[in-house]
Image 1 (cartoon, rainbow, N blue to C red):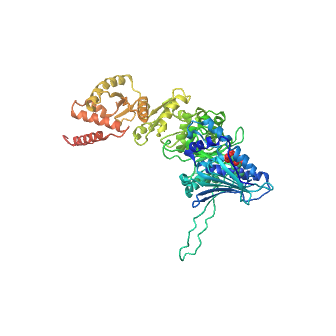
Image 2 (cartoon, rainbow, N blue to C red; image 1 turned 60 degrees about the vertical axis):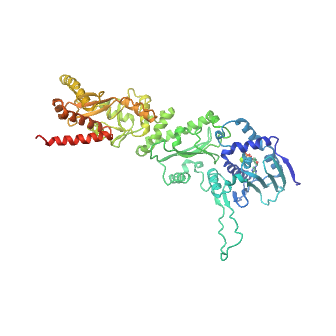
Image 3 (cartoon, rainbow, N blue to C red; image 1 turned 180 degrees about the horizontal axis):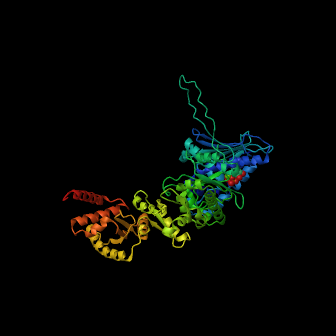
Length: 620
Ligand code: ADP
Ligand code: MG
């Protein structure tokens, strides 16, 4: 063939600069495009020559000295005609449309940058050479060279084996792509699960002269396999072993930990969706930890954490999702409104919910063991997705301070006699141990609600659980559950005492708005309890979390035990320093069982305690 020159498609001049600029943020993808073209060429060859047993592979060779990155395959190859047709003529038809549709859109919003294919090479190369030999009878090798993706030359090539080399001479501004670690990292990310073997080879620089006395030849390293781990998600779930799932998890997410459990997604109809989602051990509070869900399209990596496809709350999981039919050549806002994608996303959610409910029903023990790790995720999912909540609501557990796990129905059934439709909880079992103990004495279960999400979750449940009158109350919200019923005479007496005690405590503690109540607490050794209105407290906590500290006046009530000897004596004491001391001490003791004292409060408490001790031994 005589050397031939030409210019690629009429619009090339306009488009090439745009491609270069547009994809500035994500140049890595040219590697994916070159390698997947090689894989495609091999797939085609396999199809037309199924009996052949070639060692099919794509090899990426880095020669930093020459400034070249070469993508070689032993696939179908191209004739001169085919180069003309596939490279010179229609190459831009896809890209053109792509750019037309999304001109002006945020470039980060385009998901896969698919469709730019071969020409993405010009983002990083100042010269691209194709050396190709078709497998068809009588084909001759072809060489195609272009420096800018606009003008090219075509002539007879030198390739002797069927297949194609795409040689990129990397431009000086992009010499990052001549760094071994960089190329390897991108290859692993995008090509780690491709269907054809992919190898990476690095040409080590030849020393000009062998140093004196060193005649050992340099150890040739040989090509390294990039996609050694098979794509487990493609295997039928019934053929996968527990060990395979775990090993796959460790390899893909570079961890030594085991996942708690997993969901294998495998459907062909009504859409093609394969994948494995793992429930990781979430040790710290959710929200501080991002999951990692890798999206693939036909074993080619597209991107991490595409929230348009995977429901946001599932992002706490780790895993791989492969959707070959997903329209990736589109912007994210398009995906968000696409019916097909919505169905996919709903299906994924349903499968996760199914897995949870089947664990609950079939392996309750295991499910309970996982609960501590998965509950923030499950609760978050319930609040984010009504359908998910609907599916899992009867499998939600409440862990008690005794380490038991109960569903809401189980809790209510067991405690309904004492509590009605109330759930008593603690958000800090250690600090609130004294208050928890009061319920323990009554055999009432106390739920532990100590993660950040619980505050929202309880309000959500009160509203959505479908249980009329359901209320969550912190252990210090009321004293009814451990109060003895008083007779009418006693009640009258209590009312009188309340007035006197309110003044007494206001004077002793300086808290004018403190409300005081007298009641007969069953534990007569307990002088006083400080309660706090549940709704007001929750509101205060909520606004603190959202960074608006309203300094809500907290509705505290000091409940004094009418059956306690100290309280009874206090009422008889003459006004004066001693009475103030005892009152202030009682108040502090009650406070301390709900929260630790602050700095100045501690100082006051300590010196008061010392003074009270001293009083024990004066004036015997
Ligand atoms: P796509 O892969 O989506 O078709 P590309 O721009 O990546 O688009 O490639 C354009 C065409 O060039 C391919 O369809 C194929 O016909 C041809 N081609 C590219 N690379 C190779 C290769 N390594 N071997 C054979 N043909 C190739
Ligand atoms: Mg391609």
